Image 1 (cartoon, one colour):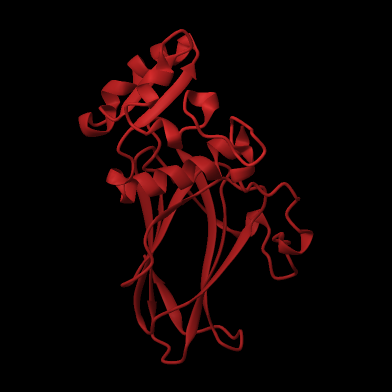
Image 2 (cartoon, rainbow, N blue to C red):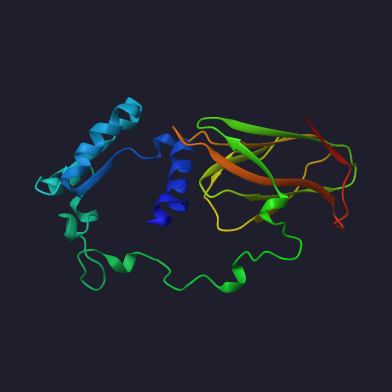
Length: 226
């Protein structure tokens, strides 16, 4: 459940926000009765163009016939009313799904090192629902520099770096302070934006520390604007 409400939800939200026509129809099949009630509640909040793409098929409906209105039977697994089976004769065509089941290697985990700050060493901003906070820096160092960001939030938040690159993304809440190091594009003004635009009611606390350093790790020449 945590994956569906965190990274998986963010992935779908990011894709659909940037490519709204990527989905022509969304069929929710074999849905329990409460889904219809839930849909009636949230549907008025969704744009009409998006709302018209969603079809909810309850358990006792003829949803298999509806699916075949949008796809040929030869391309639909037999489990969903089509004619397609996999090489093993499986009507759900499970051999076509490439889902890694092995655990993520431990060496790919982010592990705080001696340079990672504690939470009480970070600045903290309270961002109300639907709002954002922008932190502005002026970098005057002519040498190649990197922006170093340590950040922590226990709920999903948005972040972007504004110079002339780097779009906004949503990030899930995390169990520890993380570390971000990105090569900058030169001297100038950088704005780091933290957002809570997805929320309707709840504010969030975002903890952060932002620095700029040279290639060799030494502190670069920069200042934060109030």
